Amino acid sequence: MKPPYDITNRILLLYGQITEALGSCKSLLLMKPEARLRKQNRIKTIHSSLAIEGNTLDIDHVTALIENTRVVGPKKDILEVQNAVRAYDQLAEFDPYAANDFLKAHKVLMDGLVESAGRYRKKHVGILKGSEVQHVAPGYAMVPGLMKDLFSYIKKDTDIDIIKSCVFHYEMEFIHPFEDGNGRLGRFWQTRLLMEVNPIFEYVPIEETIKNNQEQYYKTLAEADHTGKSTIFIEFMLETINKTLRRTIDESNPGTIDYQKRTEFALAALEGWFDRKDYMKINKGISTATASRDLKQLLLEGKIESTGGGRMTKYKRKL
Image (cartoon, rainbow, N blue to C red; front, side, top):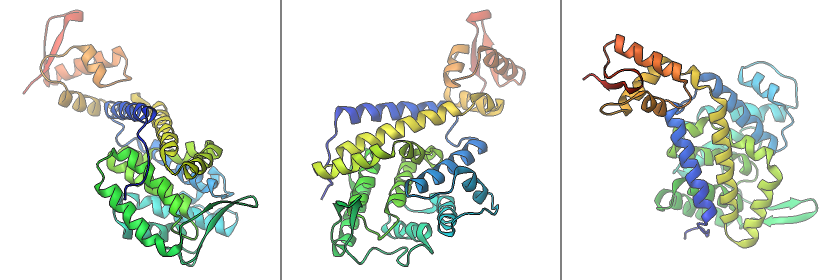
């Protein structure tokens, strides 16, 4: 059975904006950001996802643990970070459509923290907010079947993959398949699903934006429960993805992309005759002077030919 949700105008608008941002990433050669940005964003991701769950270690502690430096802090919090580092190091190795890999990821994230790491719960659970029960999860006997249906949905349904990743995140939280670790695994697995859309999502710290809007995150989860549809949560997550993706683009420095990468990318994308403006459209963010230097160097290397002069100069790749 397909999970219930509506495709609203807002969802389509946000999806269009995300698609546009992914296009900018491609033109900026950010499909795999530079090492500095990858490391920085991985640290933000791990710190933020665990902070949402109450981990007390700050971002400097997380950085130290990633660099295998000893830190002082609660043993449980240190183990949570160490497990998360291992899980995110293996992120690309998990099959996003395989329930067995989903269980393996839970095992890595929760190893040493709960006895049932890597196994679905065997007890009934509810989520408390203060002294009030906010959510009663489906009975434990239903969990394997519900998760099987959910994996069938993300594998076979023809809806937009980015939207399906949001639906999976919500439905998994609703099912609450584990005694503990549901939140961090829900965010982790959405990232893994998004990587099937575009590999850059491995390095986009969506969890940081969720942490900065944590109250709204839980509010939309609760409102989706109340309406019986994940629509409002899909809208929240698409906005979160869009904001984080654009911030990742802003934090990157197009000037650090070297000449060889720029020119190889441009010559592969440009067909026939082109001018300096066309070259700059392909390599967004570079200056007019950089474009002129690139084209002059390509001429000297014999990789392109030119015709005309001044502003009317046209270029074409030599075969």
